[in-house]
Length: 363
Image (tube, rainbow, N blue to C red; front, side, top):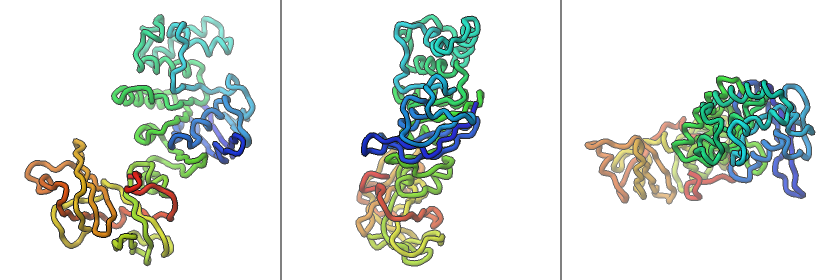
């Protein structure tokens, strides 16, 4: 395993900037997820690390060695592609051995390493099969083995679970994390799936339009988003726009006066982000909370969501454990009045700017 350092990495295509001065240090044995919407620059960044795309500017260092202009086979990386990229005419064992052949590893050593890699992904009994004889999950494990067999200093994964069904995604996700931890692999994982990133990564790098928006642990990004984009992309947030009238008091555009943390933000225009699961819901209108009418009730199994329209026209979605029979909230339906409550410390004040609101589909 090796430390990976990106120093002001940049990629331009004519006047279009795909990756804009990205700097990042991935420690030995750490799994870092590059996360963001399609076109944010995460895959371009990964392919520059792998050597498949040349940067316009910046530097890439692996294990203390500058590899910015080295070809892929000299970078000490192993990559798993979204499409698996298996050779259909080769057996499982031959696919896994391909990278070793390119590196001119002696045959006896290669056979030993292939067997070991297939055992790691529990496919040793399928070594003689062709890819078309395997399930999607098995093909993905072959791709993992092919990347692992070269003993990479840095392990790169480009949305490796996107072609799998939901149940299989969960199983392979767990296997990847267990392998990464057991082998101590320095890993960069690209995904647009926030749940995947939150459960897999030691740290997240959230990108948008080629720019890194925030870097931190899953908890740091969820609890303390740096801006409206991160608040809307990591998890789900209600966003109310308005102004901080004074320290500890926020007034929304709809006229809602709310207690907020008295942090260091100066009075003025601001936005407030509030997670749906931090909101309590009680039937009827009462003092001591925010009153509105239910627009929609959505049953999600363990949780139920209530989309509530406030008097000022703003909308807030609350997510609570599904009420049991006998709970008064069980009888609440669209059109009923409810009272919403939440602790002031659950509110996150952010600078105004672009970012999705519930009405804009950002929740």
